[in-house]
Length: 113
Image (cartoon, rainbow, N blue to C red; front, side, top):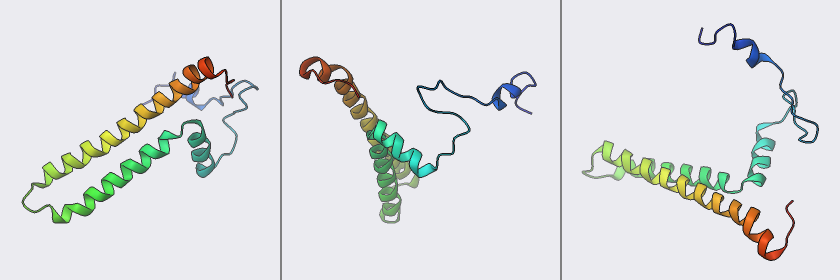
């Protein structure tokens, strides 16, 4: 087994955060509600996921019409385009977070939520 006898019981412990964070491991939260909650916290994550899926879907669709291009080269181009979209979405998310946390409160005197 991958886990040693010393570490494995620690993984089985029920983890709870403090009451002010209002989260515990025994709460039931569906996948959709979790995705919606995470989307509100960081709005560029679903944009990155959607863009990744769009680029991959389009690339696989165009796989049939690649003419004389090797399949490996075509797949590499799909991968690079999809990764580029995700990196761009993450970069925009970081810039938005920096703006929201540092620039807007400093210049516009808006309190954090």
